[in-house]
Amino acid sequence: MRDEWVRATLERAPVPDERPDFFADLWEEAQQRERASARRWRRTSVVLAFVAAIAISAAAVLGASAPHRAAAGVTELRAACTAQDAGGLPAFSIGAKPSGKPDPSLINVKPPPGYHIDPSLWIATGSGTSFGGGNVFSLNTYLSGYQIDRNACSTTRLPIALTRKGLPAAGVHLTDPNTELVRRCLGTARFAFRIRIVTGKAGVATSAKLAIVRARTGKLLAYYEWSPTRVDGWSVAACE
Amino acid sequence: MISLALDYSVPRGARGPFPAPVPLPVQAPTGRQRFENLLDRHHARLRRVASGIVRRPDAVDDVLQEAYLKAYRSLPARFASDAHESAWLYRIVYHCCLDELKRRRRRNEVPVDPELAAAGERDPLDPLAVDAALATLSVQDRAVLFLVDYAGCDYDTAADVLSVPRGTVASRLNGARSRFRAAFGEPR
Image (spheres, rainbow over the protein chains, first blue to last red):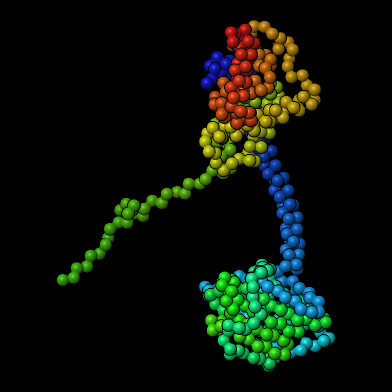
């Protein structure tokens, strides 16, 4: 509740006259501060963009598609991946080819910029092909280790047997280096795979066994055995 | 027999052969326009409040300019209510007044004219006497008096501006009114 006597008295308190340019000064100062703020933001954004570019490069090197270097021996990997859509349906492909024994002088020789080595065994999602687009996993006979897209795939503990048990007995067997076995599975949004890679002295894959299952049910969809000179593959009828 | 009916009716909203009038798009006010409207409503009262709290004529313009610049920079897209708008703006001005008083204290300035602050009966109709009476009050007393009794803020808004509980506003206001009246020799 207001005290009217106090209000009336306070209204008689002296108030200094306003400077004639009070508002002109105010808006000029506001504009100056806005310009200074914009300059600061520009400087900050340049620095942040630079830091982000470094972070993205580092992430790409460490995670998304960096080749995992492996020593001689056996490497096992289990991962669950999300399939991208192709034509409105989630889709992924498993491909392998008997690319032939590599030239020892070219092993672990980094290809020049703009070139890449075709994978010998790969998994691609969406409308990806063996030539790099959409590969979530790949290995080849020239570079040690394997590549996995950690943005699409994460490590899983799902039990996956490395066997073709449960698949149709009829398989595809290839030895011609000019052929490849590709199976495309539609309608499975999330799949998991287990791969066992045997590597040689240079860390390059010499053979691999790959089983792919539907992540939700664990149902085996395809099983591949790969080596530089031979590919054997089995798959369910749904993967063509 | 088949009859063909041609529809020559005028589209809804149209008058005669002329197309329907298209309403002009209403342009949303810019940040500056909104802020100028805000100042139109509050500037005069804010000036008196700042002047009463700071009590130094040459500092009032600077205090208000600093407060307005801060407010303009952080102007919200909308306010929940008029009380919210007032509380927000008065709070910024109040804090700028406190900053000015702190600066003055650091510079060892004497806040009160001893002659004016001398006790005695004053005429409440005399502006200088009112100023002298205000000089006898603390900053908190002056702030609560101007917010509630002059600007007409309710207790909740004043509590929001001063960042104190509502009960503190009530008790502080009671004491401030008594002291202010006493400075004029008025009964408490």
